Length: 408
Image 1 (cartoon, rainbow, N blue to C red):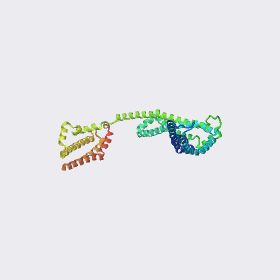
Image 2 (image 1 turned 90 degrees about the vertical axis):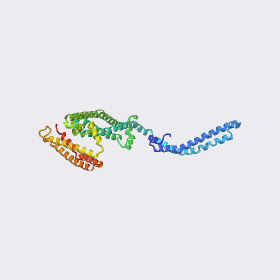
Image 3 (image 1 turned 180 degrees about the vertical axis):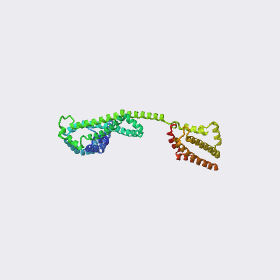
Image 4 (image 1 turned 60 degrees about the vertical axis):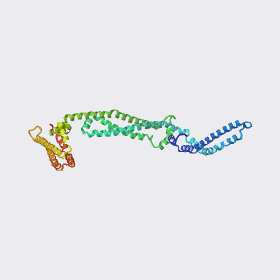
């Protein structure tokens, strides 16, 4: 009675019993508690009255109560009258339930259900392990799907991995398929061979009652064996993949990736081997630029010229001219058949540098506008045009593609 409705539903699905218990909680229990409270108060009042009368010397004849005490005791039946009437209304339903239970739960009928109890317990244990393995299976499937997509994206790495661990990769795929098949088989076997009504009919049939009353029916026992086998196989396959095959594939893939990177570094051309920072520093040195590569004297000259747009524009124009001269010399060197960099193979790089010179020429013309109107707004506009010209032309990517294939 002290359990809440949730616990009652979990313990029993009998709607008649639940209805009776709910009525006892909602209608009978409050009346009983109120009657008990009033009865306790009445008992205290009776004891107090008897004590007061003894002090005053009032004593009834014989062993009888005094008039006051007798009047108080007459109130007790009135207190319990309403709870008694409420309980009397439950007598008939409870008797009918008793007769029904006696008829339906006869020993010959309950015996078959009692024999099924071990099967239900085993099923509950199998379900717990099945859900646990199912969660691990879903995680493995998702992880392997994402990992395989990453590995196959690198064709060279995937080809090497298939060559070294082709058998293991096949076992992983087949293991996932086998676990998926076992998952479907478990759901089939977990029905105990039929619907709920069919299983109940089987439990009450003479076939299930044959044999030793303490034994599980052979049909249910066979299904239990199948359930246990499927759960066991699922657990073992998952463990084998997680603890062995998957880790082996990951370690092999990491080793192949490291080896491929080492091979790429060895086979890299001089253009690819030189860092962008090194190339930028060499170009700045050739142009005698300031900034991170400036000497102390150059930095002082830059600070003195700050704030004067005209001086800044002239300085930038000189640097742009120096850049054009340097790029032109490099282009001529590439086209010189007698140089070790020249020849037909360098024509692609020379063409990119020629395009670069065209962009620089346009920027030089724009600088003349800044010199005509030396304002901060014009200077900022030229700087934006400078950045946009090289970003939109893609000259850097073109030159990198051409030079990356050169063996020098």
